Image (cartoon, rainbow, N blue to C red):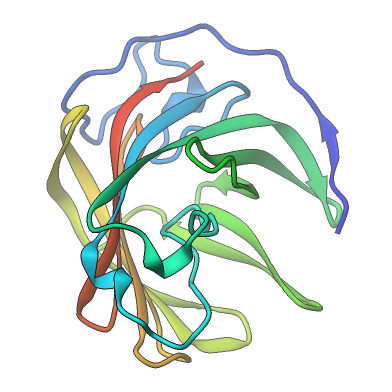
Length: 230
């Protein structure tokens, strides 16, 4: 799959509050009236911690780390206990993928230089990510809108990948501050043990935190340190 980039001009910068709620308007750019603001140049920095449980000698391929699906750093599962690395996510610009408009983002691990290039879009019904696995591709909601506790959905053609909106006013405390968030749980039961990603989205901010699990074991967590929105 080849994407054609068409970069857009940036918008005016607007300061964000430390505690983000479910509001909007009043001079706030439209790109920020979202649970995942998408505008060229938007940048989020995170602390990504890989926990001690991932050092165990498990004979299976290392899975990607969290919401951004970045490959684990060099050394894979043999990293030191609670090793922290910086992850930076940046919106590069607009892209056309299979005839549909998306925003292209780069998620980069500073320590290793490993990057993942991901494609996102949003509308009144949700925030979507373009997934491609082999010959199959899908436009998958990572968050249904408006957020409603108990909403569930799957990836088309993969009923074993289940998303659930678990909470809509969940408070998450991270290095950047405390935020009121929507919490979504994604469970992939096609593997053993199941692979789970729990994500927290704050309105007008974006992704605040994610935790990944193999079975019941927390293997990594990602926490927002800073962000800059256009």
